[in-house]
Image (cartoon, rainbow, N blue to C red; front, side, top):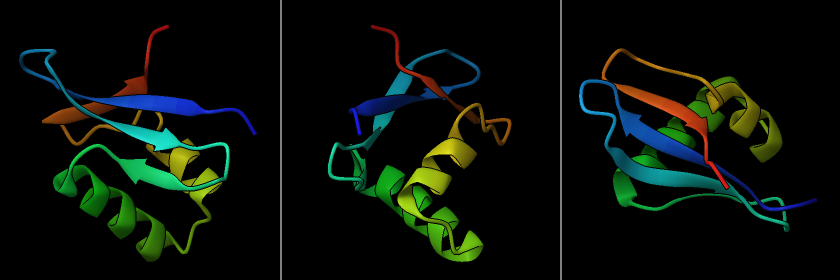
Length: 72
């Protein structure tokens, strides 16, 4: 599995707030405690594997933040 990264971006300013990474080891990690909490909540509520949670978060938005693939 290759390393994949999503950016968590503020909708109103387009400022990157942090990242979500699906590592080569298949672990899903957030760049801050708040982002890690978002990941953990989604994964547990949906009983999703890290891969499924990563895919579910791709292009997700709640109106305040959006999750998009990292460029580069």
